[in-house]
Image (cartoon, rainbow, N blue to C red; front, side, top):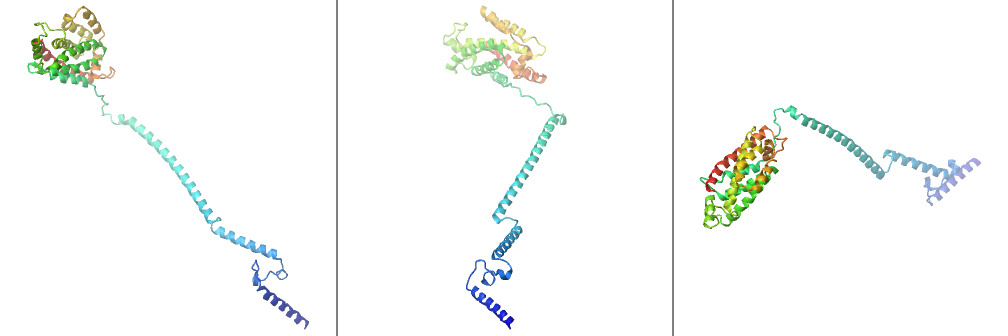
Length: 333
């Protein structure tokens, strides 16, 4: 009887607590809405709270392990960094390979260039272009001076101008000859430019000056076009003999040829002073090969048999143009 009464009391007590617990909301959300009963579970409220926190922490850790161990944004940053590091490493490796390949290519190109002469022995060595444009101009302009039996004055003056440029390129040995030619060319040019129609040919030029009373009979006035052209003819005759001696490889030394030509064409008309000065300048003339190299625009070391033949061919053309021109010219004055 007493035992039954105790059981009933327990039941009533629990029922009352359950009824009271529905009227309150506890922060820890205990089962059945009432605070933990330590005397029932065998522990305190603090222990239960720690147990729940530990369980929640374990759940979070499991979720992090499933997602890679880091929250979404941090994981993205980490992945980007790893990707960039990997790309940088690949670029460095590729650059090393490219550098190594370039060195190999350069070495192969160097070997290829060195072996070209061996692989292609039939190719001739590169020939240097002769700088004979000045000599070519002289040959061309003088070849056009003779018009039948008359000498074209304008063309002759043009040819003498081209020849003056060519002589100045021949070195110091022809400097005095070139200076004398330039002085006489200025004498001829100045009067001719005043009346080019009256002096179209050399014979008409001389006749127009005689009619103008410039000359006294057959004596030419010193400062006249005819006198300038007369000295030009004598200078060209001197150079004709000099250049003819250069054509043959075994000919006389240019200095000796110049002395002989001077005695024949210029010395009889020079005064005492010029007969001393002019031969002294001719004594500085170099050998034949130095002349040929100068006329061809190459150095003495570069001069070979092929260049020699080509330059001599041009000198022959010049001499061939001068010879009939001087003979016709001499008939006028």
